[in-house]
Image 1 (cartoon, rainbow, N blue to C red):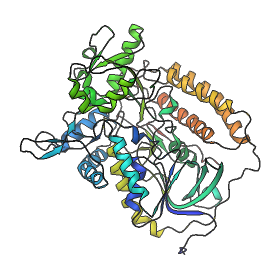
Image 2 (cartoon, rainbow, N blue to C red; image 1 turned 60 degrees about the vertical axis):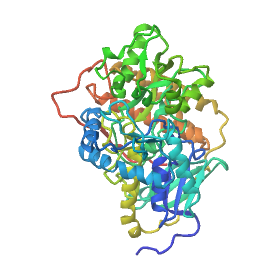
Image 3 (cartoon, one colour; image 1 turned 90 degrees about the vertical axis):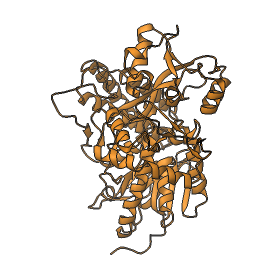
Image 4 (tube, rainbow, N blue to C red; image 1 turned 135 degrees about the horizontal axis):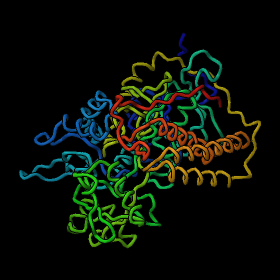
Length: 545
């Protein structure tokens, strides 16, 4: 028998969403007309990868020159044989309706005036795309999307936005001694009070983003510590394709702006990659030159930096007029100008940096994971869209399409799910306050350094094994620390990053070829003797709290 109301002693929501980016907020808004939804944000609501996304969202709007089939083909080519064609078609076909839904939420995309005086969306072109199909809001698309969705969510009476709340652990029926493995809720750290609370929910959604802070240099905000992937892994979910970590080719190289991304759209509008002496080098790597997919461009830059012993290469858009640059790239122009770089007069120093996690928690076409009631949407998930390499501006599209797909499935399932009974309270009886916080920062630094050195853009089996040896020692130290002291947000991130690092290394060691974003000197060619296959990892056993 299904109870008709939740037990009153603990916090309860119909749907608990971890993550306040485009995926999490979109799903919350889809569901909130009917259900009570809570959205957890580890820090401020805007501290998410969506907010910092510059480029845009890919969708076919130019019916005269572009087509759904072309977008599909480009995505499959970029994915290097590992995309799921059905998922690619599903996603691409919903591109335009996703953009129109965002417009209804108040997002103002950049427009241009046609010859007849009417307006249409301005479309950029980015690497890997054969046509202009990037819908954008100047060069700060993510910020426009994020702020609009936050405004809508804040105004909705059925949505609770819980800033500074970090998910500690998923609670499944199995973990509390029941026979099934259905999701029941989660333990959540309120960072303002320092208390861990049990929150019950019929449905839990992971929309926590990627894991790129496992690397020393990243374009992502500090929240990108692989929390959702680690949570799902500990609960017993499969993960897939974690070896495919995308490095964006052009992160601003400057001591005061280590995480500032120079949008791919700069290359789409004619930006040229050059060495310090002014020579262009991309023609030596790919006939598409600067418009080659990200993995090719990132490896080319990495190769030139190592070959010439230089700190960076340069991206030059100065052959365009100042008016053109200020119109198309106002955010980049002003950010660089604040650092005494006038991009209308001089090239931009750039280096590759970890940018996007193409693998993640395995999901189906409705964002369902292996655990009933647990969904994963956005960068945390491995849907089959990206394969071995995500094509530019397909990420926000994936967030929107799969948020709507999850919404559809949740509505069909939720009324048949019983309200979770009271959950065990978080046990802190055996722990104390930490007197060794320095251990966290030192372990964090060590992890990110050896991941950058040994598991980066170019790999070898020896480097991967060396990284795994160091990781084994860190895991022991962090596990001891976690068992002795009260949790903090920093400790939770470190614990999750160590798990993610292990998943990346294990996946990379299993792939005996170079494909997409995974390049190893020991196996420099694509394996032509066997069909292309995903790397799938399954926990040996579901881990306890």
